[in-house]
Length: 182
Ligand code: NI
Image (cartoon, rainbow, N blue to C red; front, side):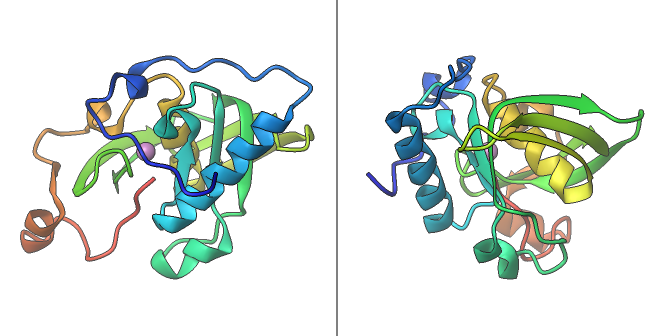
C-alpha cells in the first residue's frame, strides 16, 4: 500500500462510471483513502480520483497544505476526502481556465466550468460534507468528480487551440510556468 501507479489516458478503466460506496465504510475504503492521499502527494497533484488508481468507486481527494507552495496564486484548499459526491451549480456563471491531469501527463488544456457550485457528500469518517465554493476550489471539485463518470479534461476543451504540451504552451505565452494538475 502507499503510492500507487496512476493510470494514463487510453486505459479503459479511466472511462468507466464508478460505483457509489456503500455505508458503513470498511477497512478497504480506509486503505483506498490513504493510498489516494499518498499518491496525490507523491505526484504533487491538486487532487486524485479513485479510478485513476484503478479503483472504480466514487471517492476523490484534493487539497492540503503540502501542495500550496506549488500554486502560489491560489487560495489554499482544505484537504478533502469526498465520497459519493453530488454537485449542484450555483447560478449560470462559467469560466475558462487551464487544467492538467495526472492521467494526462505533460499536457494542459483550457476548460470551461461552473464558476460556483455546491458540493455534498461524505468524508472518510462518514460525516456529511456540504460546501458552497467558487474559483479554483470549484474547478478542482468538478475536475475530480468528472473522473468518476469516465470524463477527462481533454473531452471538455473550450477550444481545440487551447490544448497542448507544456513547453510549447509556455513558449507561446498561453500558460504561465506553473499551472494546476489534478
Ligand atoms: Ni485528473
